[in-house]
Amino acid sequence: MVDTGVSVNLLPYAVCRKIGRTEEDLIKTNVVLNDIMGKPTPAKGVLNVDLTIGHKTVSMSFFVVDSDGHYSALLGRYWIHANCCVPSTMHQCLIQWNDDEVEVVLADDSCDITMVEAPSWWGEGIKCLTDRQNQDWCFVNQSKNGVVPVQATGGDV
Image 1 (cartoon, rainbow, N blue to C red):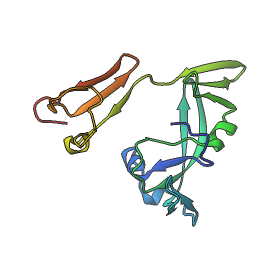
Image 2 (image 1 turned 90 degrees about the vertical axis):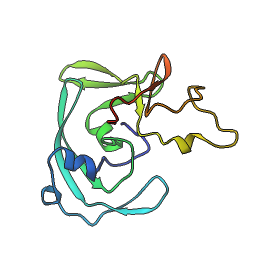
Image 3 (image 1 turned 180 degrees about the vertical axis):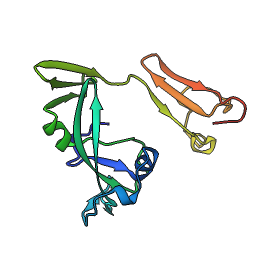
Image 4 (image 1 turned 30 degrees about the vertical axis):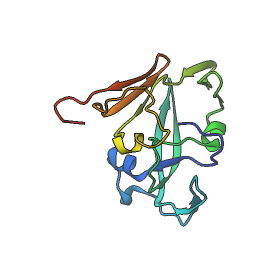
C-alpha cells in the first residue's frame, strides 16, 4: 500500500515472520514512530529487503512495527522518492521508471474484508454493505462490480 502521508516504509512484524524473518534479522534501532492515532510506537528494528513492484526490483529498508494495520507493507515517501515513482490515487496506478522505460503498474482493483464479525454489522441504523439480511458468509469481496459476499466452505476460513 502506498501512502504519501507516511515518511518511512513500515512492515508489520506479523508479515516479517511470514517471510521467514525473526527479530535476530532486524537491525536494532531506538526509533519511535507515531501510529495513525498519534500513539508513540517503538520500532522493533529495521529490515532490508529486495522489493519488486511491477518489473522493477529495488533494495529497500522497512521499519518493523507491532501493528494491527490491514496491510502487508506500507510504502511511504521514502520509497516514492527512492523509486522515482509517481503514485496516482485518481488513476489507481503507479508510474515508475524502469531503466529507460516508463512502467505503469495498475493497482489491484479489488480488496478483501476478512473475518467480518456479524455483531459489527448489527446495530440501530446500520445496514449491511450488500443489503443482505442473512449473515451466512464470512468474507466480503469488493471490486469494480460492487460488493459481493463470499461464503465460507467446510467451516474453514
